[in-house]
Length: 355
Ligand code: F0G
Image 1 (tube, protein in one colour):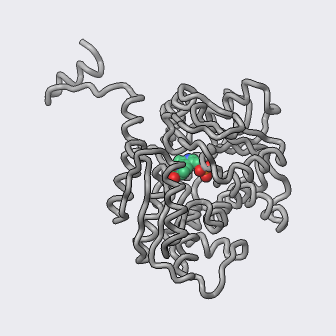
Image 2 (cartoon, protein in one colour):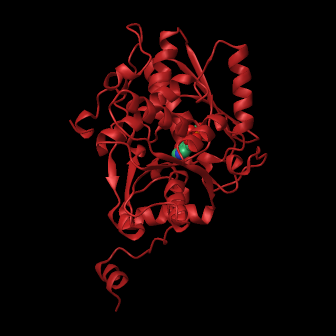
Image 3 (cartoon, helix red, strand yellow):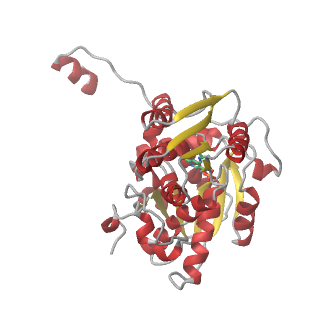
């Protein structure tokens, strides 16, 4: 069966044998996962590689976070939690708020004030979460959330929560199923470093279970202004247009570095200009609209190819982690403006075809 035929089936059911579920685990789901893997023909030809993108923006709340959140929420309910909390650059808060609403739990989220994309804020609010904006960054928000969850009966659903990674590793299974085996290379944005760690777990578990044979080189990309893993030190004032990965002290940093080193891949940074160029190119040349952070995987691929990091024809998967609609402000500011015309035919014809 193709992955598209399985859309709508709860992720937990599809990969039950790979997940720490018991008969007591409720299945909280909105049909997450089973996202398309799409070949980028123009980019493949240009780079002389076989490039595919995993469209994680097609998950129910528009990002890969749903994979981990459906499972973290199911486990929270199993363990008797009535409330959940997370720090977030936006997508985790949207997913937590949605799945908490579905599970009947209350949800609180702490976000960096003024630094999350508009669509993500709208999501957290409409799903009914209590939203606190700190005068600080994600790392500050996470520090506060960790302390709150230690002192109060509220379950932490950041990627520190091991069930988040368990759910997210299923994306690696889907990549292997869609391609028939693991790709040669996986390019992925890195923020708090949970997702790259989850993919590496997934590729290893699938291979160990005999469901795939190889393992990809794991190549993680951070934004230049918030690249603690590239610099080898905490970044106290991270800055980038890719707000989802505006993180200076990644919790899963060591695990992610181990995955990149062990796999023969590595970590690198891309500038905001490179990210935005890839973001515009994906939309205008391939019809793929992702958020800026997601485009860092493709920006990184282009940079790595220029540095001769690949062999001709290698199969590369770039993870496009979130939907472009999340961040309408950046999309509009990166595009040509609207042409305003009076409501008549001649004006439209003139605007399109000239005099
Ligand atoms: N891409 C997007 C769109 C994200 O939202 C995130 C993380 C990442 C990539 C990086 O993933 O943190 O596992 O390395 N967003 C988190 C959030 C931090 O709060 O939504 P990571």
